Length: 414
Image (cartoon, rainbow, N blue to C red):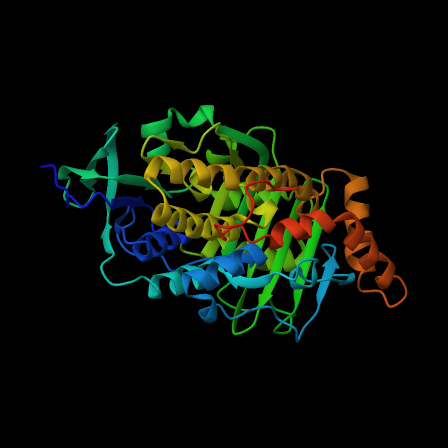
């Protein structure tokens, strides 16, 4: 059955993550009737480490939930760059990097956005789109309830794909996934630890960075740490042919793991839903076709190496609603994309460069990142390295802080 409200402002939002929730809030405030569908049977509450920069905090403030995002950066302990024996020296924590990001768990942001949803936002779980057909006046979407197997067709005035890097909306409306995916040939794994790591005080963190592989232990205020693995591979497809824990152990072998790495491996193996995925970017010439638009990881997926995924998703969602309140759909989408594309393109390029901050690809990169990050903590050289970072990363800091959710801002990025 085809249903429609007839008011010309009914939107389907696919995906209940940060970008989808932010879109639903923004569209509802703009006078639209959003319907959110999510393939999972219930709202997912787990989450891993994310950093929220200025673009994200500005958007969260406009969306109405910044006050619920308490900074979890731990300032009671210390961060050490260590080797497998546990020996190391102090280095800066993520919250001390240029741009002073707010340290959060992904679940923090999703929970705050969920609580901020205005009345009238419909949410359907265990529901996926299976067909999208559009004409100049609207979009007919076939939705399937995965719990019952039933399908029905509904009509919308706009469809927003915010359903992640393996977006069903993108596959249905923009073509096969492989055409748009750019693999970086790195794998990532993440887990929220159930307990502190033995030998570490609350608030302590660690970085184990070796050529082609790294493990980060992120401390948080008020909860247990999270761990992030990153490693280089020459065959992404092969990495998915064995259990993730086996691939992680192989990537960090054949050397003995040592006490820290073994403790995190054990936590990862016990976890119910740890993250294991490839680092991929989405590259599209256009993010909208007719009345179907992609947003967040569905459209660009900067990867975690950029540190800007959550911030950009929220800002893009806020901007979308603002423009749709002011302009007809086609004009709003054109303006939206012109405003965002230079910003996204910059951070996609930066993600490739900043990968060396997370996982050095050579001995030279390893020495360089260690020298800078540990040098920032040195009483003698800290001032010099901070000046060096401010000088070399000045544009990156400005871009992370840029308020792209403001519709009145210029549509070009310097």
